[in-house]
Structures are given as C-alpha cells and as structure tokens.
Image (cartoon, rainbow over all chains, first blue to last red; front, side, top):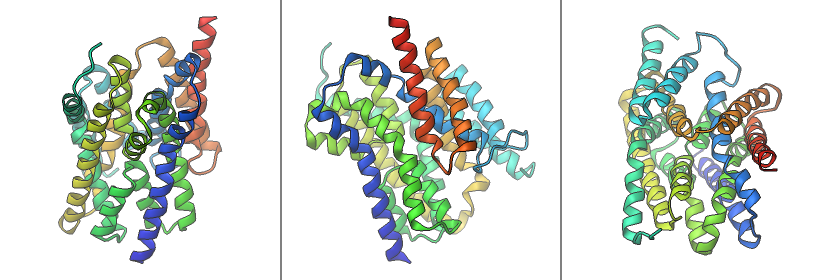
Length: 108
Length: 231
C-alpha cells in the first residue's frame, strides 16, 4: 500500500510540475505580443472564478442550489465580507465558523 | 522605478504572505487530517506536500483515495485540475523568461494559486522581481509543509476535519484573492461569464473538465472585450 501511494505521489508530482513549467518552457522561445499580454491579464480572474463558483454551488460535485448547502451560505457571507473589508483572516475565520455552526448545531 | 535589493525584495515577498497565512494553515491542517483518515502515513502525506505542493489537487487526491478511485483516474483528474497552472505559467512567462532556466524551474516548481495571485499583482504595479516571487513562493511552501505535518499529528485526537469546517478555508481564501481583482466593468463581465461557464461545464462535462473549459473561455471573453474596445 505504502509503496503504491508513494508511486502515485511521484506521478502526480511530475504531472503537476510539467503543468507549471510547460508554458514557461514554450514562452522562452517565442515572443509575446502586447495583444497577448492584454488577453492574459484576464487569466487570474477567470481562473479564480472557475475554482470558487463550483466549489460553492456544487461542493459535492452536484449542483446544490438550496439553503441546505452550507458552502453557499458561508460563501455569500465571505463574498460580502471580502468586498467590504478585504480582510483575509477575518473572512476565513467567519467562513469556517459559519460552516462549523451549521454542521454541528444545525445538522447540515 | 528603482529595483529593490534582492534581500529586500525577498523579505517583502515573505511579508506579503502573512495575510494569507491563516487560510493556508487551516487548509493545510485539513489536508493533513484528511490524509490520515484515508490511511496515508505521516511520511507519505508530508512527501506529497513537499513534492506536489498543490492544495486543491492534494485534497482531491485524498478524497478520491477514500472513495477508492483507480490511480489512473486520480492522475488524470489532478492533471485536469492543475491545468490552470498552464494558464498561470503563461501569464507569468513573459516575466520569468528573462531570468534563465534555473530560475524558471525553481519558480515553476513553487508556483501555487496564492503565490501566483500575489506575484502577478506585484508585477503589474512594480518592477518584476524574481526574489520577490521566490520570497512569496518559499514562504507559502514552508508554511504548507509545516501545517500539513501538524494536521497529520492532530489526527490522533481531533477526528474528521469536515466537522470543523476547515475545508472552507480554501474557497474563503480564494474569494478574498478574487474580489479585489475586480475593478472595472470588463473584469465584472469576465467574472460573471466565467461563473456561468463553470456551472455549464460542471453540469455537462465529465469530472473536472469544467476547469480548463471555463478558465480558457472566460479569459477569451476578457481578451475579446479588450480587443473589441481598442479598435
């Protein structure tokens, strides 16, 4: 078991490294035009939105658009807090606390 | 613009990590706990943090191990999830290419969502600096490794991390990273379109394919808006 897991970890590590290094390698050889840079400026917003939205609306891989979805509730509060305060630690603490209260006391 | 000294830039990078520290630590602990639940040894879960260093992918791998997913599918899914690093690598590539292969390998290995967010916002406002990126990346790497081990140790007396809500640390951190980035109507449009695309992808595409799908198309929407306005 242990040996297999270590094999899997090394496999994931190699794949992950090449996704991180892939474009660095390609771009070393090619010039990037100003236009591409403008396009690529939208990468951070698109990438983070892609990670966040499904994690809130479908925490268990299936769309859960209901008030029974604790991720959605905590996520909306976190969005409002992030917008108003930009305070990372505060937002994380409040978010985790909401999830904890909903799960432990309200049986979500 | 004056270039700060390497030492100063490195320390600035380390300092920039502090606001993110709590979110990263919580998520690292959650990963450590979950990994023990899946039956991983302290050695394996630490090795994974040191070699892979990708919170979302590691968390996902552990969940898949718990549900008995075949290894080949785990490998494939982590690749799809990590496909966003291709985009991040491309976006940082125009800066890192000047610094030589060794630096590129090192900084690529240490690339994470958080280090990318901090680095790209610094690079757009200041003179791009490899020592700054190294400070950010290394700070996050070391923190991730340490709190992963702590999570692994905590397993014997704390139980399931899901009860504690620690799994929410990652989305919460990403939310605070994303929201301040949105400053123009074009940003808002890209964010909302990507949100819809990611849900469409989630519903209609297999496993995690919505990630490359929505990230690439969302970026393209931004590019089109930019290009169309400049004409």
